[in-house]
Image 1 (cartoon, rainbow, N blue to C red):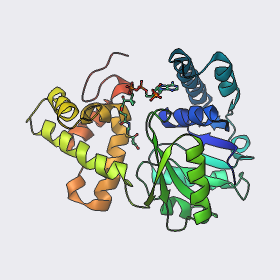
Image 2: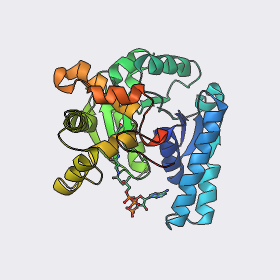
Image 3: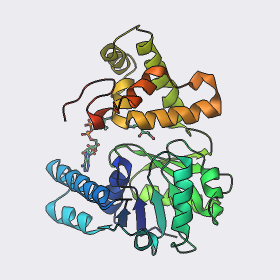
Length: 284
Ligand code: CAA
């Protein structure tokens, strides 16, 4: 089955980036979220991506209009998921929230619709178990920003069918992504490795061994990373980084224990770039 129309549920950083990338590559997109305000903010973000794409010479004005025309906002979940080939869920990293959401989506979606989750670390098999179509549930994990980062992890749950994996892989490739395949496991490939790397950076800072600036500079210039691990955590969002760290801790034990410094920042509302402060300060 070729994916021609999708529903993106969740109009945050990931959902909007995925919606933009899908529309750029010819896919019709229905976009929804729990509040109309969030959807409108999402559409404003997408308009910003399009404007930036034009300024960079990646799109002409005609293409920009076609892309925006392919994105249909709706506050109504039923209208959003009713006639689509694939639902892409991009909501907060919480198993219960995702399971409840897919249960609700199932009451509206057609029987052949694939359920894809953009979860960063949670179990695809557990999400699938909350639906009546576990063979059609798959992890399709984009990286932030979804229109620039070239990778998509295709995560295969214990019940995911080969046909679903193949369709999801072709969908990601249609969006100009390189795919890698991973069996269902906490953090998959990238976030399991990134979690260990960021965790050590958090601990070096927590132990007072080096400043945040020097930790980032060390990894940029000493390991050739495009951005340092603390800036990257700020970019991803420290609430997301904490949710991923907790999933990894539960799965792999104390070597992934969430450092106190991360918990402290999240609990004081310092969530990284989106709140103006995390490991570093940002001017909005
Ligand atoms: N529309 C179309 N194309 C765009 C665009 C837009 N709005 N914005 C950028 N692009 C294109 C650029 O034209 C460029 O294309 P080419 O390669 O064809 O030239 C490409 O995207 C990259 O853009 P830039 O060269 O401007 O990139 P940059 O030098 O500013 O770097 C970055 C941007 C790649 C994001 C860099 O800052 C970086 O690597 N940051 C780290 C990002 C990262 O690691 N993300 C992963 C986070 S972890 C995660 O997401 C996992 C999770 O589950 C939590």
